[in-house]
Amino acid sequence: MTINLITFASVLHKDANIRNSHEAIVNELERYFSLNIIDYTQINNVDKNHLSVLFIATGGVEKLVAHCIEQLPRPTIMLADGIQNSLAAALEISSWLRGRGLKSEILHGEPGHIATRIMKLHKNFIAQQQLSGARIGVIGTPSSWLIASSVDYLLAKRRWGVEYIDVQLERVYEKYNRITDNEVGEACAQFASRALACREASPEDLLKAMRLYRAIKEICDEEKFSAITLSCFKLIEKTGTTGCLALSLLNDDGIIAGCEGDLQSIFTLIFLKKLTGKTGFMANPSLINAKENEIILAHCTVGTQLTEKFIIRSHFETEKGIGIQGILPSGDITVVKCGGESLDEYFVASGRLVENTNYINMCRTQIRVKLDTDVSYFLKNPLGNHHMVIQGNYVDEINEFLQAYGCKQVN
Image (cartoon, rainbow, N blue to C red):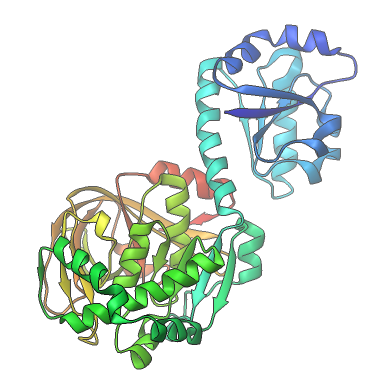
């Protein structure tokens, strides 16, 4: 793990004296990291593939930092051990940055604690690096009912570095029509053999759904998409099948896939994967019990690798194609949603998956979750419809990551 330590020191201090004065913190950091110690005059030449930390080595450097404002890493992390008036300078710089709308943090205290904190910051940095340049395929157009889930492509790219790329459904139809039943027969048999049961769906339904998966997977490979969101309902008219199986298998393949062309939800899913390593379950809040502080979330697709077992079903609303009824493991979960046209708002809450339900009037995969925070958020101030569920409690990590990039938490 390599860290760029961009050093700001008064001209009154020589390089040798700087290292000797700060020997304790430098030696501690070198136990965990490979340090690129760089003079601030070389800030333009810093390798941006590594986390950069401003080493405020002395007082009197406030204007030096101010002159480098365009080159400072975002957010700006400053290391100040207090020697040579370094902490006082860091405090002044932090206030100056805040006045210009820039996030900063001062690392100060026991050297081991600072090293631990840098490790966490490095994890966030890697997640942001992986987000930057991610290609998100928007196959078709967002569903007409998603009136609060739009994203400004340009603002999203400026904030996060992600790129939304539109793909016409005709390209899917062309590939779908070229793929024969014989080409996917073996894959269908293997998928069916893994299922606990098959209910409404027929073998012909499975063949169509697998052909659609192959068609979309080809496009993902050709375009090098990290993620896709699919205009599921429009596909039914031309193919006679739904995208539920395709999205399930794409998530199993490591290509993050979401429903209904929801632009905000697919970003939420991809950022969760980069930060936590977890694949999310994208779902509709379908029933809320305010008294018990519980919510039932449901959808007709889920990655099979998230399930303990699964049943092959039809799609709930249309009763066509293939839907997935997944049985998810009980235990700690996190519910998350990023919103806003520039993806600068979010909701996050921890909870526990207490039951896999089986209501006949809801989508196929259904989970009952008891939240640790008030479910009234969903009734009073929701960020749209779809919300994402990942296994495990990642509230602290998510809060820290999103707030570091200027996002506002909604409760």
